[in-house]
Length: 373
Image 1: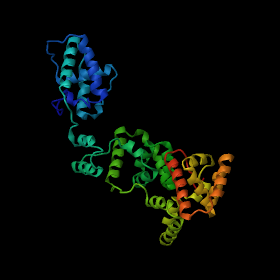
Image 2: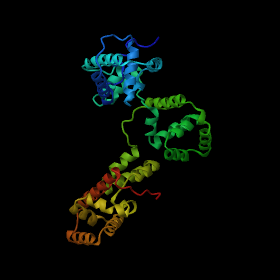
Image 3: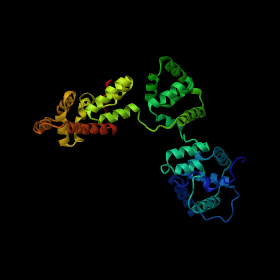
Image 4: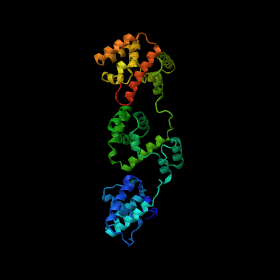
């Protein structure tokens, strides 16, 4: 029992008994036992550690799985030893243990998580992430959680630098832990020689122990934590593109011309993130036109269609062609009766159509066609 806390077996050492699958299940099962058997007046000669093992075994009999992995490893080992040592508990002794457990559980008015990490988890969402991170770092607490779950959620652009910086062996483990589709994308992005070396290293990963894989994941996640926090989630080109999307055409073209003179590469990337009314004809699937027009007020749609000139006029024809003939004819009549439209009013209406398309794209209802397609 060396190295194990003396209070092992107390109810507050059982993991998160306030959760429904913890305390609720324990009370239901334990109360059922105590209700059917008289309480023993004979104090059982069992340690609290043994009693804890009895309660865990009792719950396991009803297929209640306590989250014991949250206990320190030494306590998990001791619990396993206790379960291995016990052989038979008579009904009277079991009832006595259950009654004692219920008494202690019922006496708990409010439980606290224990430790700074538990406290910060309780305060998650109520204090600023910056403060929480500073406290974790100052206390040497890792906020990694399950490293591989976190790593698997990263975008390709975030994982690629890790794959380029780490050793071939680590890269092989990393690709083995990700979804096949994401690993394939990453492998195709790497230079040919490095991709081949990592692919071969994957063939050597069968003998790697699970704890080594976990340590690799923890190490990668720790490096991610060490990187400076970014104030903006979107890339600069995306932010500039989003702003120019809803700017007047004259302003947009002027800014792009200036960017061309300053940094042609940056300007080219910004253009990829710009989606204007003129792009509708080439980047919106014809089958999605009905969804797009439903999200725009009819009078604003008429203004947008009538006010589109130059290259944007192709999008007007594209929209009208890919809707019912009756609706298209009705819109054409309204456009003719509208007369001349102020440029500012036309651009405002076209921006509403663009906003409708962006909302549909973000919600996953439509997928825009890329330049490659």
